[in-house]
Length: 511
View 1 (cartoon, helix red, strand yellow):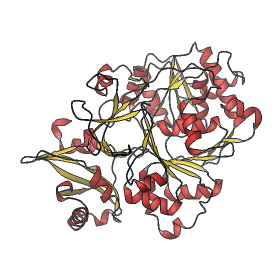
View 2 (cartoon, helix red, strand yellow):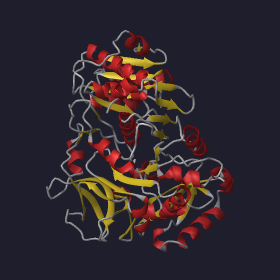
View 3 (tube, one colour):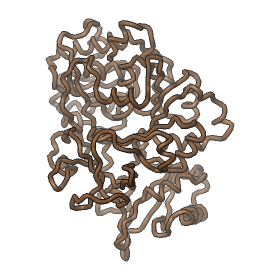
View 4 (spheres, helix red, strand yellow):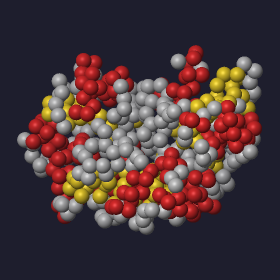
């Protein structure tokens, strides 16, 4: 149930394969590397409950570093490799990191925070050195490859990606349990996705995000091989499934859309028969997209709805989804309640804020106001991720949109996700964002910002075509009144759209 146990049985089995470079990290190497770093943490004075942070791209030793912190009973914060100085420094300071790790390719931003992060006692640099940093390789080389004496489970403490305001650190209770004790996610993964020791898990997303990091580590508890893509490319993904006989993978809907837009000859070129389970989450999937994916890959597509906060978990397999198109599943952890603005429970079919009644407790680190803002206004202990949705009579949940994205036009609530789900399927669109902009008469009007497949087609004719395309499939008041074009939209590598950055351009007073 952890790398050391796997290494004892199959030491030369690949624990990590980097898709781009082909570099392999065996289970022996993963085990010994994580042990050496855990010893270094102890030598630096860190004890269970202390904190480390690391900012890395999808590096071959990424999971070894995470395992080292986990085995030492520490809180560990994986940080986006795309951040600038201010946001990086904020997270390192806010989480209370005593050790900070980065890599030579990110040295410019990593070193820039040194003067403003006085709480960091040890700075380590992989693949090179930089001012103020010790060489990671030299620092761990002299440490023992055996487990530390007081090994116990730590926990990640991950931050929201900052789509609205400052990132917030989700701080769970520290497990402090023996490393051999299975956690809740492991039990869920085993029950729902049936992995085994010979499974091959393809991870196409940045490892600093909650789902990729947690699922890769969970599959490694079972001895699976993790194939890590340095960055997602739709055809390369299909090629890797065939090359490594991938059995399990986790994606986001934008990846489905990009693969579906590949030419037929490319989609049919690769043997995907090894795939047993394709998991998706992070954002609602447009119904036609998922229908096409199930038709292409078969009923192997699984969906869950959950958050970094861990306050609930819903799940649906392909068959349930086909019988309830658009659902994100039924609850397996926590009871779902749909509530109005005052926290009153709403009946099936009515839209409202989604709350979880759950024994799981969490806080946003050092932010009591944010913590209170997601709690049930009637004091029942329920918490929300900020999404709006409704339940059907059978208890299946359907997501409407983020509460913060709702458009109010002429007193009518409009959920931009509906228009986005339609427009993203247009063959001339590569990406789309829909949101509200100021309107003197109606308060807000619906605006679409589109990344076309070819910027050469951007202009009034395509704008008219897209508006008509949407109106043919959706009530007119829900459709954009105007369309702007961009060469690229500000989207996180995990698929999350930075809609706030676009909205701020149209709401100057909100900047």
